[in-house]
Image (cartoon, rainbow, N blue to C red; front, top):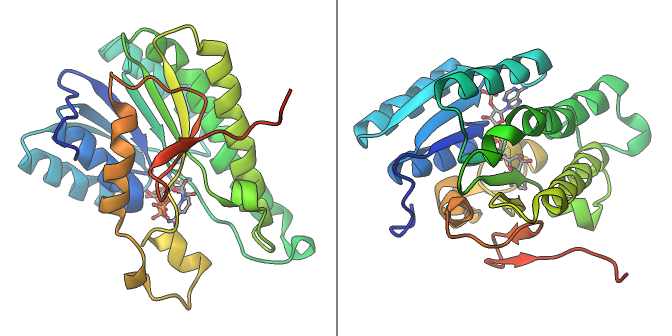
Length: 248
Ligand code: NDP
C-alpha cells in the first residue's frame, strides 16, 4: 500500500476480491483505512481476505455474489445506500478470459459469458452505485481493462472486445461526470501472475511476471481523494495515464 494513501472512514467496493489482483487491491484499501466491501463467488477466498484484513486491524463486509446475477448487483447498491448512504471507491476488477480461439470457433455461450461479466455486470454495477459515488466528496471509480482492448490480439476476440467496450463505458461515464468530484478511470494492469494469465498463457513461467500485490500497489493511488485525472487509462507498466482519442 502506498504509505501516503489515507482512506480512513471511506467505503470501498472491490469485485473479484477472492484472488488475483482484486484480492490485493482489497487488502491494500483496507490497509489504507477503508472499510472494504469484497465481492466474488468463492467464499473461501473472501474469508482468507477477511482474516488478512482483520490481522491488519481493518474491516470488511463479504459479499458472495455471482456477477451474472444482475438483480443481485441492484440489491447491493440498495444495501450500501441503507448502511452507509455513500460509496467512496468502486473497483470493477472481476473479469473472465473466456477462450483463446479463432473467432469462428468461439461458442455463443462463451462469448455471451465474457460480455455478461466483463461488460454488462460492470454497467449494472455503475448504474447501481453511481448515485452513491456522487454522494461521496471524493468518489473514485476504477475499472480493469487490458492492453488487448487496443492491440486487438489474434484469437483473444471475446475478451479484447469486452475490454474495448468497458473502456468506452468508463470514458463516457467520465465525460458525464467531469464537473463533479467523481473521478473515473480504466486501468491496464499488464501481464500479471494470476490464474487468468495462466489460463491464457499456459506455457509461460509465472515467475517472470509481476506478483498481483506489486501490481495492486501501483493501482491503489487511483483511489486517492487527491486524484485529479478522469476519463483516462492508467497503464501500470508505464506508470502513467494514457489517453486514447482520435483527433476531433
Ligand atoms: P483472476 O482470474 O485471478 O481473478 C478474477 C476474479 O474475478 C476472481 O476474484 C473471481 O472470483 C472474479 N470473478 C470471475 N467471475 C465472476 C463472477 N461470475 N462473479 C463474481 N466474481 C467473478 O483474474 P486477474 O486477477 O488476473 O484479473 C483481474 C482483472 O484484471 C480482470 O478484469 C482482468 O481482465 C484484468 N487483467 C488481468 C491481466 C493479467 O495478466 N492477469 C492483464 C490485463 C487485465 P470468483 O471466481 O471467486 O467469483
